[in-house]
Length: 180
Image 1: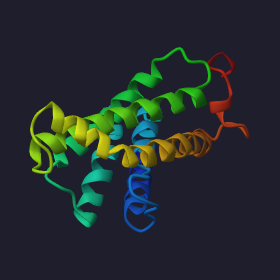
Image 2 (image 1 turned 45 degrees about the vertical axis):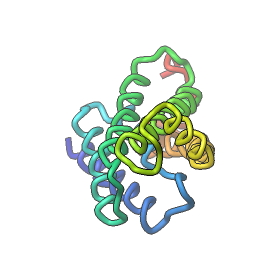
Image 3 (image 1 turned 60 degrees about the vertical axis):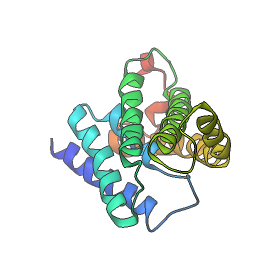
């Protein structure tokens, strides 16, 4: 339990710092990586959910959010669900699985939050045309987030696996499940 609390506090702190002090670029973020990692590695789901919610709530209090806050937050919670599902997969190489999870999470987040922009915002008409226009205009943000997550998620998975599990010199992500 103590390890889980320390892990949650460390991940929340890193996530908040990545959205505030160490912000890289628009839509290049670490929240997806931390949501996937916490849901995959932390055995108690409440701690993983606390990591995701704590990260976005605290960082949103510092940097703000828009009227689509519930879409944003639920989009990142979906990412945690992907991490929980990833635990149960038969994919032999977890590094490959983390890439797949990064892509799925990013795409769902993009479609869900842009849907929220159309439903709750005034920038687009509230019809199929407005939704398509929102998706089209959001492509540059999607590209940034997708490229960022394709790089960041596996790096965070390897680093987290090494420091969290610390059972050998070789992170277990490079080992097949049968080898452990």
